Image (tube, rainbow, N blue to C red; front, top):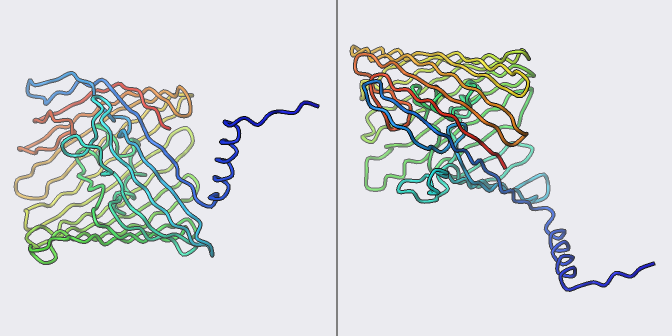
Length: 337
């Protein structure tokens, strides 16, 4: 029988394992997405550009999430998530800085649900994600282009119920924090109810933000969902956005489809914005996409989105090349870790 000598390196490793065991009730996970594509964007009026872009399959990001068991069924939870521009290595915050501008919250969770505090996704946005075959993450995605989703709220307090009979509910209040300004301006309230039952997903979302002058509220209502038939998955949504003080009154809708074919997923959407004001600034949009899985974590993808603005509408594909009929074609690679 051989005796193996314990080296200093092995002793140090054993010490780390012992330390890890002492803190086994707490865990932190590092995660992220690295996504880069080649894009050709056009505004439909003779202006176009070819470029390398970040995050057109999914937004590139670096995040940390953690939990600690506090005993009695209670846990402490947190999430810090920063956007990254992979085309030039900068952060996605204003000015190119690396900030946790995607999510930065802490909270408590238990059998009663969870409550979280900080910058986080609005409940209405969380409801919308499951209505879009592109997960609200690219130039091909209606919530990200012509449907005007407000994804996140600062200074937000959100309570989330446990899942009960397939239902999950959320309510939010976000403080305006406008010291010296108009009382009550910019506060944000929201709620959602989501239902999961096998292949069926259905949801309703509501969000209402007071304007800077505190004279009115900009309000969204959304209803929709998806159904997975196996050979094809169908998506749909209907949304309203209204604010009298800004002469804003819009209905938007889309239908979408996802079709898995072996390692390939084919996607498409078609939709419309109906401007109900006298200006009648409507928009029609459609998109196509495909994803080819190289592994569980890595895929190649294609995205194409196009809008047709009418009567001076200014909807765009969030690609900086705006005009009467903007379009974007992207091919890229995405890796999740």
